[in-house]
Length: 369
Image (cartoon, rainbow, N blue to C red):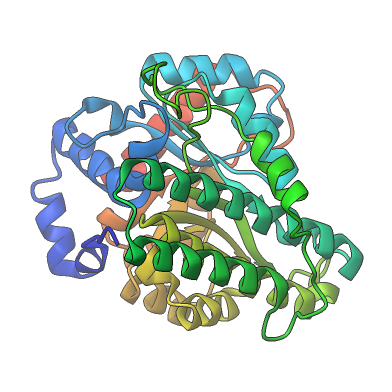
């Protein structure tokens, strides 16, 4: 497994080491680039020429949570972000939306598309069956592709075969049973898996056309989101069902991270549910396998301390900064655990590029200086 020293940054001492003298623009840029590399580094390395490598200045601006595909001028924004070196974490609500967005933005460097399963879409057992099936089979398709690539590049040994068998067994087991959600039965047929795999968009990474994998290589998904729990009045009736699904999503995500031997990123929605979210993340050791990013954190002070101790990250938007509680919370969140988000679009689905950049710059000044 790739490891991270993110837990180190959860301490005040680590924060001081990263922040150092936070007075200059260069220092702010360094902090932003470092945090971005820590939280989304895995996706950066695998997403077709990501621009936010720690050695490059392009990591100074990012949007860690945006529904880019929902913007009316999404392609214009994607092209702008690529030209400006802005890293974009585009979250989705379900696997179908993920496949569409991933194909749409595949040609733009610097855009990670997340595989989501939004709690607002968990409306009934019938709806959940389809959602979780598509979610898990999408992950399994990436593991099959990943293992196939390794099989082509590595010596064929009994140990490799045993590891491959264990990986496939764990994913299959996770897809067909869960502690409290055994009624969820995803599609596991070979035809269905093949169909899902065939819909995965091609990486825009250049490969030698003479190699057998030149036309079939697909970068594995390394961002999972938007996922989580929502106990607000409009969604609290499905509270138990949400818990079951979120548990299954986290279990599948951790299994997937181990299978592809990469630390992945989770973008987490938690409304009036932070304690339960933390319980589930800790139960499946998600903080060890994933960079856990709390989108729009709204939990209690105790929840915040617990999340920081676990090495969580927090993506913060403009409307959050208008809250007195968020202002107080930022005093407790290390600079090296803060990320910028817009959660665009809100009401107007058209976002002007200059407006977007100005928002990101304003947030950067508020969060890092």
